[in-house]
Image (cartoon, rainbow, N blue to C red; front, side, top):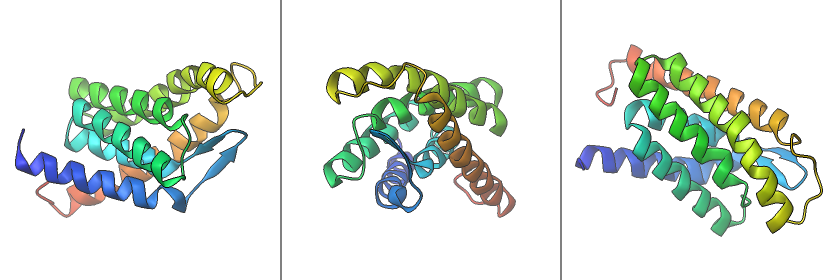
Length: 160
């Protein structure tokens, strides 16, 4: 583990936990947070898949502790972070990370959210209920993440 990665990870976790409530898309028992997806894309590209998933997990814990998240924050963030990191590692393209985030969160995360919602939250929504809001949230966050990464690359920031 490098000190640089740990510090960057801590900064992304802090930003994710504190800024997540700035843009919220409420959907029944779920709350979609595009800033989480922004952090996922940035973390996946800069730090790699393991850190991106760890960041998503810790942000989800903090959001739940602070009362600005739900249990759906876990599948809604971690699958996207993982696929974004894997896709970026494999293809070395920003848009590969973006696709990983949207597929991981919008499809896989939303489908995993269904049993969590049904069993733990007592929701009676259908299995595909979470797909549109999770895709929307991940798309908005991914676009923001791409813009941040492009800005950092344009300014020749050392983190990229």
